Amino acid sequence: MIDRRQFVVQISAASGALMAGQAIAQPALLSETDPQAIALGYKADTTKVDAAKYPKHAATQECKNCALYQGKPSDAAGPCPLFAGKQVAAKGWCSAWAKKA
Ligand code: SF4
Image (cartoon, rainbow, N blue to C red):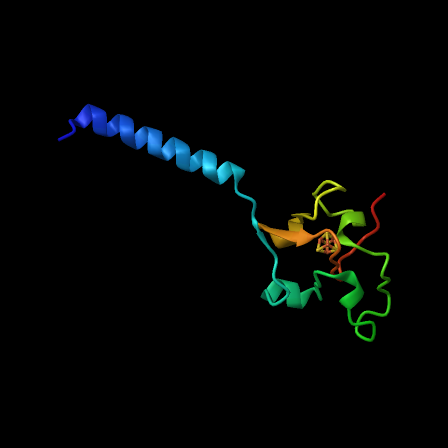
């Protein structure tokens, strides 16, 4: 039997560990089939973008050189404010791409 005080200590330790785990966990990668991704023509590989549908797209345009990309240049994926809670591929692209200054 554990008494109430021990129980509170154990719960505090467990929730602390849980919060630490959440801080470390990376958000999931954005799926191309996500409704918002479809709406913006997102592709995880910029070379797979439909040229007929997006004539202004160029293969040199990638999330990692987009003004909205929040990841580091060396990261394989990073956050984008257009897809909150998800990570976009560094080599990805969507129709909101804007040249990084
Ligand atoms: Fe990638 Fe930029 Fe589109 Fe975000 S806005 S998904 S960083 S191209």
